[in-house]
Amino acid sequence: MISVQTGDITKLAVDAVVNAANSGLRGGGGVDGAIHRGAGPKLREACRAIGGCPTGEARITPGFELPAAWIVHAVGPVWMGGAHEEARLLHSCYRHAFTLALEHGATSIALPAISTGVYSYPKREAARIAVASMRGFEGEFDEIIACCFDAEQAEIYRALLR
Image (cartoon, rainbow, N blue to C red; front, side, top):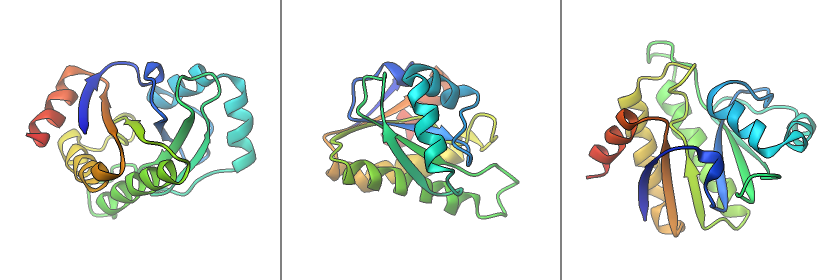
């Protein structure tokens, strides 16, 4: 089942939350900063031990102080106009995130709108890719939550899911 919620992804009681991470896994602003703050200082240590993650891929850590057992750090592309493989890279990071979560036994997962914040990916185009990815893995999870930052983004997801 795919659902859409507006709110704080760090408060969701799911098996895995997806973090819109940067390639250094250093924490930052937006969702990434909120997840790092919510998970506590052990997350920074775990991410430092991993070392980084290329754009289009994902890495996984424990959830530490979050209600989620796992944090999947997915590195989406920076929007550069659409002619630099951004769509392929965004789809790839979602696919990697879902696959890692499944490999670690997750049956429920919450995802933000990856790359739509400071990476400036157009919201509708990013949502199309996210929804296609969610539908591709829908049968593998009991619950997939698109956790949106605001009502505008949530409505884009709901319209695409109808």
